[in-house]
Image 1 (spheres, rainbow, N blue to C red):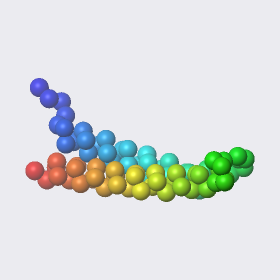
Image 2 (image 1 turned 90 degrees about the horizontal axis):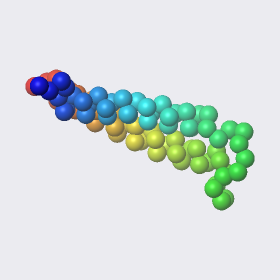
Image 3 (image 1 turned 135 degrees about the vertical axis):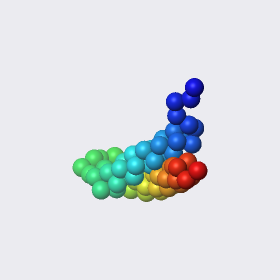
Length: 77
């Protein structure tokens, strides 16, 4: 007996992971790197957080959209 189907589990996992990625991306862009010294060579700490924030926003958005598509395909059958 299967408790949960694979598309439903995958859709929920991608949707929640996408929301987490979007949240961390927004935090990195809005708050990350403030008041910190150092960095990665010539790139200041704020710049590193900006690059990471954009990457997390894009990855989170892609995962969220894929999760929604997977959930819609699961429930439309």
